[in-house]
Amino acid sequence: MLKKRVSRWLLVALVLGIVCYSAAGINYAEMSDFSFSSIRSVFSGLLKPDWSYAYNGSGEDLISLLLLTIGIAFLGTVIGTILAVPLALLSAHNLWKSNQFISKIFKFVCNVLRAFPELVYAIIFVKMVGPGPFAGVLAIGTHQIGMLGKLFTEEIESMDEGPVEAMEAVGGNFWQTLAYGSLPQLFPIFLSFALNHFEIGVRSAATLGLVGAGGIGAPMIFAIQARSWERVGIILLGIIVTVFVIDTLASWLRKKLK
Image 1 (cartoon, rainbow, N blue to C red):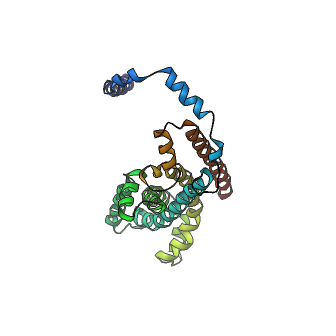
Image 2: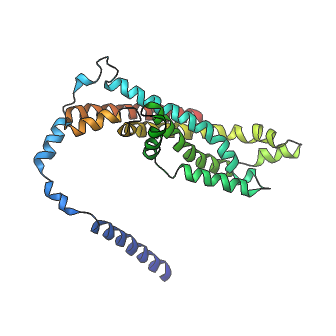
Image 3: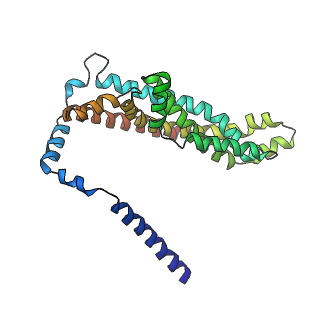
């Protein structure tokens, strides 16, 4: 009992120490620029959205760019999901019981791919393939290969081994047990994870335009730099509505998959 109390207080002291250290590293000199008038001007602009930017047929309006953002997220998620499945099959230790070295290698690949955020990948791909939506698709797809690969691997390793063992008992080979024993119970979970990461991908794609990877991010940063808070307001409203609609649809689909 005494050990639990001591460990609890040590944990509290550690957390407080980290908080104090973090607070001490902040440059509070910037607080001199803080003023309620500037905050009021920002919020007054955000609360008066520029509705003329919603759609004007130019292809550079809010609706057109939001559709492009959704397309970037969708295609990136599709690429990430398709490539994450074989990566997960190679990473799951219970599928490679005779050679654990293979699973360790591909788990390391998953860790490397998910170590960097989409924005870093977007900067790299913009340099490789040029600015535009294709760079955004590659950035989201590459990051989600690692993220989904890890989640898929964990599901494979924790799946019910009963159907697999039953098929092996009647002479089923590796590919037969995989196709008829493992994947049928895993695919609904995989699709649920993919839908969840599509939602995340839409949020990420909304910012990738900041580095030239297409989508709504570039007009948003330009509007912020120009202090056009009415334009920022309509863009933020469009992103909020888009994310809410996608989240609602994805939740409905996930319930259907259960």
